[in-house]
Length: 114
Image (cartoon, rainbow, N blue to C red; front, side, top):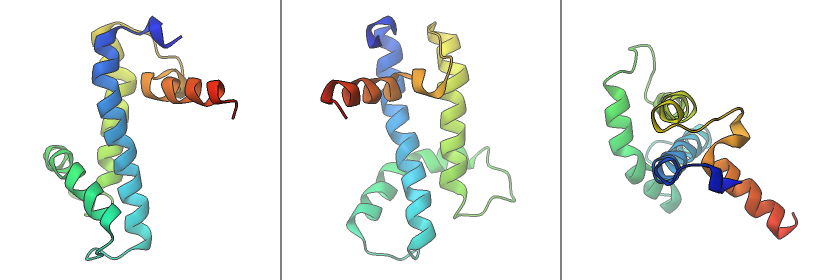
């Protein structure tokens, strides 16, 4: 079923999907950890997400503070992945599970029998 999506859609959607999920992970870790935490996973995620946070900071409303910024960036990436890129590239997305990265993960899960 993943073969129904154009290769350009996969090449664009998978990195953006990974960035979206790392943004959600950074937000969740930010709830439980301090800003100056030395956890290696959090430092890696922050380093990966810093350019995206800078770009979404240009359109970010003033009432969103620094702790909510990763969640706002994840929302912007989700909207781009769900509405904008299927329209531009030309593939159909009917639900969240029909997005290329999530469809790939769900098909891998079913192939493994989980």
